[in-house]
Amino acid sequence: DIQMTQSPSSLSASVGDRVTITCRASQSITKYLNWYQQKPGRAPKLLIFGATNSESGVPSRFSGSGSGTDFTLSISSLQPEDFATYYCQQTHSSPYNFGQGTRLDIK
Amino acid sequence: EVQLVESGGGLVQPGGSLRLSCLASGFTFSDHNMNWVRQAPGKGLEWLSHISTSGSIIYYADSVKGRFTISRDNAKNSLYLQMNSLRDEDTAVYYCARAGSTWYAANFWGQGTLVTVSS
Image (tube, rainbow over all chains, first blue to last red; front, side, top):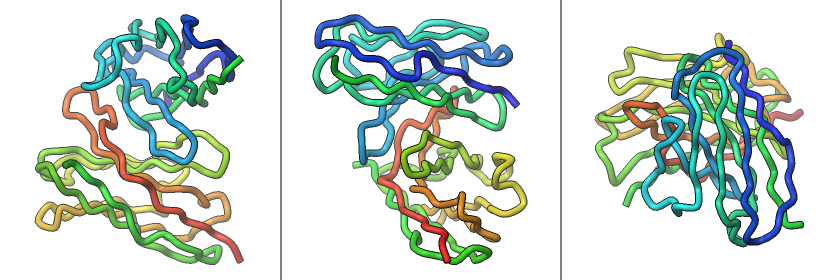
């Protein structure tokens, strides 16, 4: 099975900051890497699919990069609504494991 | 408007069974792969199962293999998860999610249904 490791597990930042979250796969997943945002009590929302493709309606401050085993989600200028938990997920091969999540909160 | 509505959650004793349903609307259900994902209280997301458009390709997480069965009825626009031999650790919110056809990302999620396994 492919294991997904996110870092950091938690992150404090301020409105306007640029933040980067990383996700590492235990073996190559080419570009089968997706990023989700989840707010408390809500279902997750897809942000990025195929490592670099933005889902329709997602603000342009969110971007994804990487291929193979190392991936990043960047938020260029944090807005108040961006404070949430972020998950990566690989869909290269079953089981489609998620990372453990990165909680982003206000400094 | 795209909608996924889960139902069937509730309280069940350890060793019991439950069948979750997910009713889809607002899109052509038969054109989309589907997934079940769960989230235990205060924990992260756990992918459980995937089913292809026709139901011919099915995958499971090791944690539920042999106990849970995913199925779909395209005529009824419905996805199902039959859960048997339930354990305390199966307590979670269960989400159904629509998957994209190229990268298989979960691009739309239901609101979730809570399953509580307790005596």
